[in-house]
Length: 580
Ligand code: DON
Image 1 (cartoon, rainbow, N blue to C red):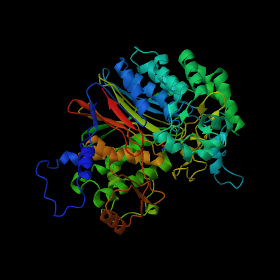
Image 2: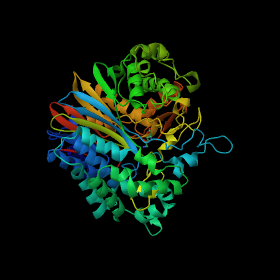
Image 3: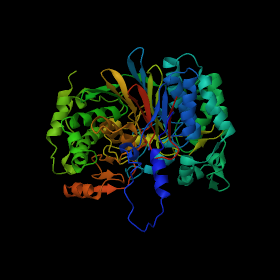
Image 4: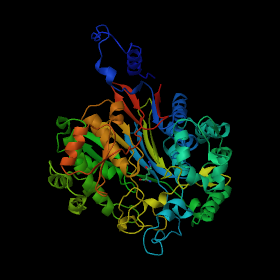
């Protein structure tokens, strides 16, 4: 593993130059500034690479690769480790999506381990007495909790696609150790705990773990999670059934009902992940393979890329007003479509083929004015049917054989509803908020949902999670994905465009400022870092630009000249890409 420190070195040298020189300083002759000195560079390795949002979990994954595990083994170990080291998003009590590429079989499969609605869930359960959505109920109470999918999802990934050289217990052991021995509160954990004080503080079982006295643990203190260690040991010894049946399942169901929810032990026992066909598209000759419904991510990523394919983004230039205007205008109709067409494929027919058809994108592209922003009200969901021919975290892993995993999983909000099921150490999600409380209602991310995404017993709420692979000539090139709620899709989109159109290296592609437009609200969110004149041009074209929102954590891996390049997202403290 090599991390280039030339930029840091250059800054250090610059700082050591005396500040008040009598004569104007001569131009340096001996150390000309190299183009690379101003560039962020990815981490390089030749055998395997893990890029995740938390350094200890990354190292757990690299260790599994070194011990002969494949990318799936490493990903499963990272998944369990993040449940301990990144408790705001890594989880046992949530769910997610894993894309697996099996090099020897040249096959890519999607594992859907999204949470499901309990059997007693009803379509109107998130409406208050006034018939309006009750946001508190869908985010802060037991009703918010979907039946967790992570444990069965990770175990199924290992059973079906692991190397066979390591047992599930081998993959869980590092996580159990971290939970039992404790980890220092630092980096992202130290940043997130104070922000979650209100959420965690309302539940005694959570305070017992994450608080010292009446305040959250602080930087420098130690987070020990003994109950979580016991739960992990039980799963290591008994497999996923130890979580979905018996005392742990009973405790989870009791905790949810105690908080006003309707989940039963039978809901947990009945939970099953689904193995799905990924959605596939192409962009300028590259293959795009991503997550199908019940995530909207893959469909809308491909839909937007299809629209962008008709524009010369590279000629416009990265970060230019023209490129950002084009991106925003391409994003709007995709989010309008999402609000109308997307839901759990088990309950609603999603017109996938139409939404990702190139001719459909032609109709969307034709409606874009290169000079003027369209108000959201002027953008309606399209009609893809005629084209129908036939606080989340993401990590990426690639192994020496070329197998790869792109995994995004979540509790929805940071720390979910903040409730640890007493005696289990398991934090519970608030994924039920991803359903639409009623047609046209917005969820916590401002996303409008349609009837296709109504609450129903056993249904999976619509997601934006977008674990993705990009292929070149049939060979895997890029593994990426991100958290960020509704901004996940546009984050993944911009990593891809930055690499393929703007030829940025992976570290730059991940770090570059991003924009986001989700149709409604009619606002272009822009991260810090765009030039004032760019923002002025965008505003003059009619965009309502709001600067400041930071988007995502796109921990990614890419092949470059036969080496693996890893980049973790600098937007979060404590992220790490590491290989060997
Ligand atoms: O599935 C979804 O789309 C959301 N529950 C994801 C939430 C998320 O990314 C929060 N993280 N920043």
